Image (cartoon, rainbow, N blue to C red; front, side, top):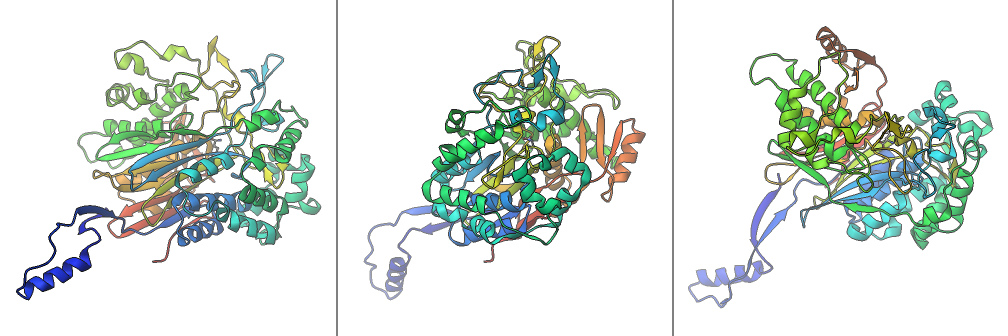
Length: 589
Ligand code: GLU
């Protein structure tokens, strides 16, 4: 909790003098009463939690130089794009949720990749057949116009304190000098099964970068990336137009026009990219206020619906120690079914986002718990809230995605916050490289099958539309409106489950940030419940759920990347997912 202090503005020395005079028996000369100002001091320090120590250090350096959390975020993300290229980068998109403490304002910067103007709902349909995920992924068509760079600019214009160019320095230096390849990156490149899917070898520029002489970059090798350094240098000195107009845009178009399945993206599509500045989607849960990104992100809807349903599903009494896990599983099953059906780009389709987290709807929805072996179906907030039925507006959503994303959390020395999840969609995006960075395959986050049972699917492709995202960058406030927690994760569809695990673990189960990140993941979407059995406690959960009749899928090697910060009485408590290579570090006092 922050300390609220009363003090007398700007006149303390004068007052002291006046008091001293008064005690000497003479009349004080001060006649005006100085104004009383309430100053809300941030006393908890600053922290950065992200997927790589070099990115965390870049963020801390930005903060040391007096930067805002947004400055640190740009420094963090440009380094991640270099050292963790499988997960995100400037060829992709992101959602950044910013909390500005002095004005008590939340803003969401939606830098989601956008579909070219020449596509239609049949983007992934050929001769009447829906393309398989791998064919859709490994195609020029899967790329959306990248949004990360425009997001940096819009957020920096609104919040930045450090010079724009300074936020790129760490990444430029590391790209020019070379960075040490981490075990995780090396392992990803060396995995023969993944290599078949990513098909980096099919693209000469990517193959030469990641498989020099045909061999995967080895752990500990030093890899430089002059193309990335140069791209960032231009953006830093000449502005983001160097990315969206001219040579770079032409290179993106040319690369995506290559086989297989060339894209129809044009330089006009790239020049026309717009960051959407949106209000955060916030809801009340217990004494907390949970805020995350609105559609096309699923964050705001699911991170409110799951805790809300969880509370309604917890038995009022009894000493069943497993009851919270069961309530969490059933809450997820209901919330995922709703999310899958309704959430899409609200600039294109009607999304009942606030209805889906309305307490009256959650009261009704919580009565619809499905048998453990049933496949959950969506609820109808229209009917539940006394309006027109809604569920029949849309066909059943078949969207799949593959994990390739990163999340980081920043709290700066003034208590401003960034919660940002960034992506290129699948590992290494669509595997095509331009000017030192990988392009994304984000459009596979659309429903590839645009209609189901003759009904349009809400998340079907359309020109200029943004695909639905599972990314859930979240910020939570306590009963006094003070910052409590910053969280988020990569992990494709499972993001929703990973992030809500940390929310309940910290706020209801008493975990530290690190314990919450490390806990076994439980993903209850659709017909089965995935349980991470290679983490302590996971097998017991799997066995208990199986005994209750759930269709349990025992999972190993889960792909969460939770990087969270919790405000405690003792200060900031950081957590970094042990499944990745990140750290959470406080800025030295
Ligand atoms: N592209 C996915 C989304 O935006 C995220 C993929 C991942 O987390 O790896 O929801």
